[in-house]
Image 1 (cartoon, rainbow, N blue to C red):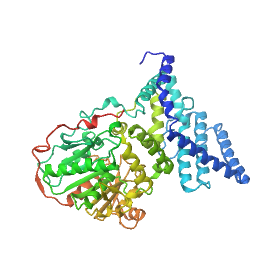
Image 2 (cartoon, rainbow, N blue to C red):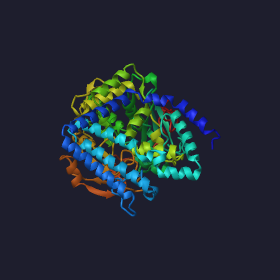
Image 3 (cartoon, helix red, strand yellow):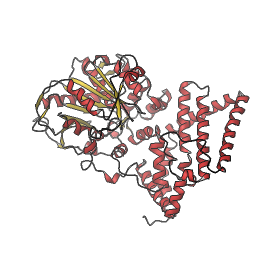
Image 4 (cartoon, rainbow, N blue to C red):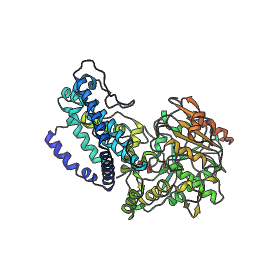
Length: 573
């Protein structure tokens, strides 16, 4: 335990926290506060225009609150309001055992229900209502009694039993996180790249200013003549697909008899701020495709991609098709948006005003910090990805347990300003990629209808970043034979579901061409992992077996350094 006095800890925290509090006045925060205030002013003003309804609503609310108060003094009375399924904030027995805290919990839940109902019943237009609903939920989550020491009975119990040492440890955790600029979600000391993460043997065989190309050592004597090139998101590090041995998708591909390569994107700094989406294709995906073909001697390759990596792969295929080149034998898209007409709750952050702010702020170049992007994604699931750690780390003073996916989640990557603003405007704001010829890259217009190879779409039913019903639209934009599979869980856990564990379930074989709901109604639910289903699909696309390469790379593409390579080790400032 640190021997500093509480006063010294508080003074240190105040000093280190200066920049954190400055961040609260950023343009993004001001925009959120402004929209939240304006929306609620409109709701209350319109409600007051109908005094009878307003009085009736308020009377009902106070009557229910009074009922809770009476129940607090009634032994054995059941809770009138219960948390929603999956809400773990009040799962501790202390919330039921203490009548006062049980009342506080129920009063909070009732108030939350009332506020949400006010928004849903309001006369706001749909767009404004969605934003107001999102910001209201952020406010509701932030003021939960579980987030404050004096109103959380679990924290009070911990404080009594430890004689306050939990709060001292929590202050230390808070100061460390302020210094890092993010919340710690796992015991980061338990992981090291190349030691217990990203350990699949391989070598970097090509490198330029944007990418390292990693060639993995085959694990079977024979391999498919068509190698796999994996295009991960450029806003994350590739090792999400090569975590520990037991949940490495890369290792699984190798074990199934594939020759596997992956792109490791450089974590850009200020000097690369003017690099555009064009350059990510001409200097990233296309050189990687060419290198894989030259090393393997294959005429065509199989491509696998995830999230924005899938959007990059699709635009790459569009560029090559416009130039009468089709080097991809099959394409796999994990949780990928090709149509951005409904980005889900991410749309709250994307409108003309906010995109203009980003364009103005980043017009001089530089980067969009990965930590800021990670914070935006965390807000979509604030209770799970923000407040649960505030309680655990800062109030209870505990270190979260080791979890490889959460370690990766905290290892953020920047985006170049030019690419980020182009991406926001052309994809999210104007949905140009879904329009034939709507996007021009590398000197040619993109038409996704020219993608005519077999395509496998994997989406996740609880995905809050790439909503599955929007990713489903991609099946209608490409022209090749399509396989659509819907996995259980969310954006990451839905993808990282090892076949060896065979957990969860997935849906397959729905009828395409009649919309997402019809597909789901006609699909078949299958227990276990979708990995085996994908492997069967890939093998069905053809490609004879050949001897596995004896060496990594070739005379032109020599081994530069062992996997995972140096690019993936670079940390964001």
